[in-house]
Length: 346
Image (cartoon, rainbow, N blue to C red; front, side, top):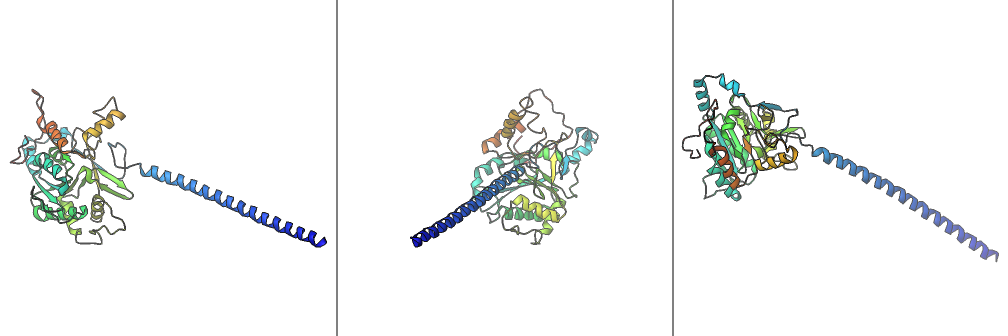
């Protein structure tokens, strides 16, 4: 009996020890689980904060606030009127813009549209294709990589035309450009200085000109870029990073080594003139954000580019910009930039 009682007492102690360890283990698990959940919640909040900050884009839209890069504005009409008529004529003839279009065979309909429309107002235009295309004349880059295409196109342009053109404009086939407005904007800019212009965007510590709105380089910037293309430590063909960055960012990295920095192009009111969206999209946004000032809230009167256009929209833009006229209305522009000989657009 005594032995039986002692056995029962022993089993009871074992059971209580097991229960103690079980509950201790569960308590520890609950504590660790609670800590884990807290960590997850804090991590989620942190990620959400980073995401929100990441969506605060510096360099987009019709910005009126200040940021790090330079703001370059178009000349005032009053300044142009101070120049004699002979000087104005000489100025209008001296501004020569060479246009670079980077295209791929899949863009053939866009290619046709830009060829038939605004590129006829460039003083010279060349299409640089990823491969040989029989339908249109182009310079074959023999690569699908957009950064390599851009590098090769800039080198080709500099080697062949450095003594003939002082400004070089690069664009996508989805871009519509008003070359006369570009020339007007550049009127008081010295091409012997290192200009790198367009719609600027900030990505981390890097400020670059977005290819979506078109990129303008002066002949001095072209010289500096050309001198770096053969130096892989400063201007690598593959970017020299674990992950690939876009071609417009890679261009900015190379130009930074040459002491050339991105500058945002604006009109006299501070509105962007190189646009990364279409007119239709800008108007739609203005109707939502500025319903009482749709036109004023949309775009600059001196806009140089719009992007994201279809082939049909290219032709509509051409009609609105160059062909539609109000009868009896006389334009009193102080300066005239005539399209090159052979242009059949107006």
